[in-house]
Length: 223
Image 1 (cartoon, rainbow, N blue to C red):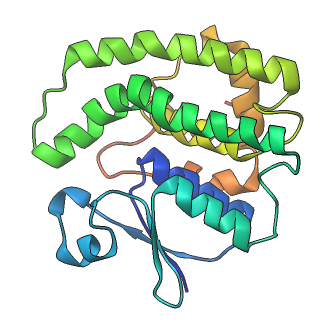
Image 2 (spheres, one colour):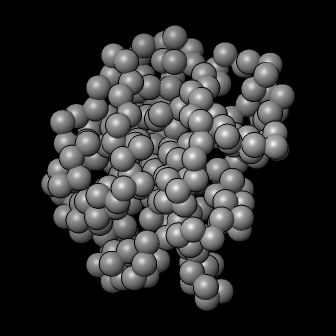
Image 3 (cartoon, rainbow, N blue to C red):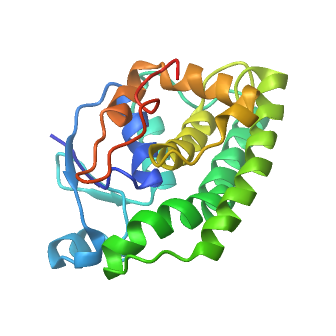
């Protein structure tokens, strides 16, 4: 069976986990503590970052975008990219938007400071300036997300695509900490309720980190 090296709160790992579930591909999840710099893991991905997918034949794939593009090309179950070239380009633009811009401006400021900084360095004091910046930035991103979904229903059109998964992967990691101001962003909340009601999302809603439980609404598809 294929193995996915991941961390429950790594948004890029979450992206791959949702895609695997959408495509009904079995895998063995393996939590990897990248800060331990295990030689065996570095042999799979010298960059030392998650996620890494190891296929049954031993082939190792790294980088979340490369992995999900590979899964899209090799599994016909539940296509997650549209057929039209322009629509595919828009999906890829939004995958990059959330994987790069949202992550840099929101997820890394909140999840990075509150969780991974402590895990990686043992430091318990997050940078309050970065956290304030993350809380400030998230409103602009949720407004943009709401504009896209009010126009189309989903981020890149009328169908669920990799764009929605990329956004939900980042937002769900922040939501695990209870840091998403849903009450101020109704269109984004309506979209997220539709996304997290999908069966593929159950793999995330079951996450529970020792000593860091999610808020009560986290696992409730209807909030």
